[in-house]
Every structure is written in structure tokens, then in C-alpha cells.
Image (tube, rainbow, N blue to C red):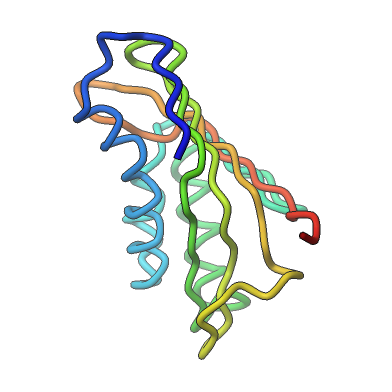
Amino acid sequence: MTIDQATPTTADADRGAVAGLTARIVAAWADHDADAFADVFTEDGTMILSGVYQAGRADIRAFMAAAFAGPYRGTRVTGTPFSLRFLRDDVAVLLTAGGVLAPGETEVAQDRAIRATWLAVKQNGEWRLAAYQNTPASPA
């Protein structure tokens, strides 16, 4: 993973916590836990998926609850950080590669592969997502 240390005072713990947001999302998705998924976001966070825009933690929670009961039932998600850049000590941009795994899959199918941008902010000592957006990955 590429780490740009734009702010030299950024602690290793902060770098780990921002990169760890992906693990929190992956775990929440594996459990189909819309509450845990939404709790990764700030209260006014936004989420953009293909064809989807959700604003606010409550709307993100409701969308994911419906998705886990419907089209995302039985799926898992993966995301691997490949770039982390701190804009300030309390604001970071994380880039990941991943996608949705259908039941039984161990690798993401090309038509579900994505690249994502995560805008993370530190609020009250905790890193959360202020904005998340993904787009289909182009074929290799």
C-alpha cells in the first residue's frame, strides 16, 4: 500500500485505524449487520454505489438492511487498501480494490470488481467514513 505522509505527525495508530475501516465494513457485511455497517459512517456520511446514493447514517442503515435481506443476501464483500493519504491529521483518503463475492466465490468476478474512494475523518477520537464512493474496475 502506498502511504503519503503529507502530515508527518500522523501516528501509526491513525494509519492503521483508517486502513482498518475496510475490515469493519467487510465484517459488518459478512454478518449482514446493517447497524454495524452504518456505524462506520459519520452521522451525515454519504455512500455512492452504482445507481445508489444514500445520505446520512440512518438512510445508509435502512438501505443496507433491505439489501442484506434482498440482492446482497448470502454475499460477502472484499476490499484491499492500495493507497492512503492524509490531507490533515484528522482527514484521510483511502483507495481500495475489491468487490462483492457471490455465495461460494473466493475471487471477485470481473463484472463485480470495483475501485473505491473512502474519505475518513477523525471525530471524538474515532475514525469514521464521511464519504464512500465506488466505481466498476476496468478489466486488467
